[in-house]
Amino acid sequence: MRAPEPRGFDTTTPAVVFKLDPNVLHHGGLGVIRGLGRAGVPVYAVHEDPLAPAARSRHLRGRWLWRPEPDPERINAGLAALAERLGRPAVLFPTDDAAAIHLAEHGQPLRSRFRFPDPPPQLPRRLAGKFSLHQVCRELGVPCPRAELVRISAEAVEFGIGHGYPLIAKLATPWTGAGKVRSTTLVHDEAELLELARACEQYDTGLVLQEYLPGGPGDDWFVHAYRGRGRPKVFTGVKLRSYPAHAGLTTLGRCTSNSLLRGQAAELLQRLDYRGVADLDLRFDRRDGRYKLLDFNPRLGAQFRLFRDSAGVDVALAAYLDLTGQPVPDGLPPVGREFLVENYDPIGALGYWRSGQLRALDLVRSWWRADEVAWFARDDLAPFALMCLWMGRRALTRPFGRRPVERAVLEPPRYAGRPPEGMGAAHAVKEDR
Image (tube, rainbow, N blue to C red; front, top):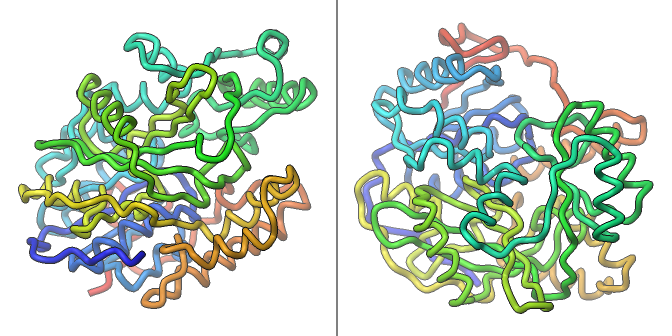
């Protein structure tokens, strides 16, 4: 299903894609670059490496090579320097939790230079935190799985004994990172749980254990929404496959209309007084017939391009229009449209194949019928080629016990020109005109 390109709005205000997590294989930012860039918006982006796939998109007007230090004042100084180079206000798009949290808590001095949503300052941190989200759900009466924050291995073992296996383990604050520990892990037995708990003890990070909700095909849902000045724009979809299997990021998703879930999500955003783009993960629990909230990401979801409606509007464009004072047109959701993440889906599909839930022929058919993919685009081939190189590098380094590419600390690249003031140790600016 080919979604229409939007037409007839003012694109003179630039957009800036901003993230703090050093993950070069983040396809959500590339989606913003391509979507707004094709619509005529001048798009700029912050990148941690000159060979990051999104940094080479032909739809990018300019790129800032910058690895910000974890200090609010230095981050703001770097963004202010970026704004000086632009010379006019721009819409700022945080594409990871850390960036969204920073803007909510420390972004007030930047409001004369950038346009971005203004949720209650501490709300994004509470929603992004895995146990603090559980506490929010309990306060508001929102259905969610049983969960517990554990600090030592003995507490983890006790949770496993009480709730059984498998169970879900999550980093309490995934935006801070924890070495080789995945942000979300499906744990099958006590031995796996102990290994994970000891790793979290080593890195001194909290571990949230969550009951595993039984489910089957069609039970995993996600919601992408934007709430600004007008009525919230809310889309619903089904997660068909994920990586890791059954407990990770969406690698194959389908837009599916669900008026009940759409209404519940809109009500939750209103009760929270949440403003901005949101990405929610839920599972339908057949034991009590309720949708249970698993994650609330206070920023763009990486697969947001799935939901480009009949007016050509997705949540990124809705945010751009609203923040530039333009009306957001209504459109019908693209029911049946599918989105594929081609670098992670083959890996995640192995888990479904091993459990007998996926046949090779069905896998190939799902790749063939995907309406949009994360990396490959005929009008923008460089990001796909670079993604393949990064994935190859990761495949070569993993067997030797090295850290995954997306969590590795890359050597500072060599840059030409003098970097702007206040942008940290590894930084530079390169702008294409």
